[in-house]
Picture 1 (cartoon, rainbow, N blue to C red):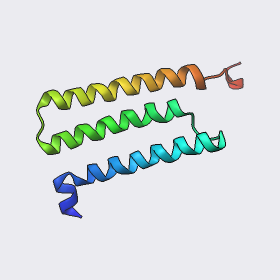
Picture 2 (picture 1 turned 30 degrees about the horizontal axis):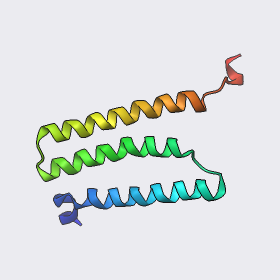
Picture 3 (picture 1 turned 180 degrees about the vertical axis):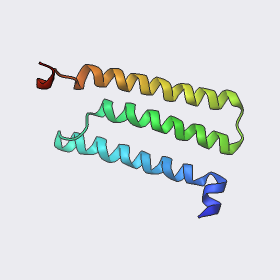
Picture 4 (picture 1 turned 120 degrees about the horizontal axis):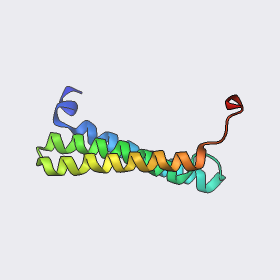
Length: 97
C-alpha cells in the first residue's frame, strides 16, 4: 500500500473511482429522474477532480504552470458550483421570518 501512495498511483485509482461515481450518479438520475441534479454532480466533482489532478501532476513532477492551471480549474468549478447552488437550491427559510 505504501508503494501505491508513494508513487502517486493512489490518485489515479481515486480518479477512476470518481469517474465511476459520475457515471453511476448520472445514470441513476437519467433512469429514475431522482437523485442529484447532473449540473450539481459535474460541478462538485469537477472541483474535487481538479484538485486530484493537481496532486497527480505534483507526483509526476509536472511544471508549476500545469499545477497552477489545475488549481485554477478547481477554483472555477468551485465558484460555478456555489453559484449554481445559490440559484437552484436556496429558498427562504421559515426560520428567517
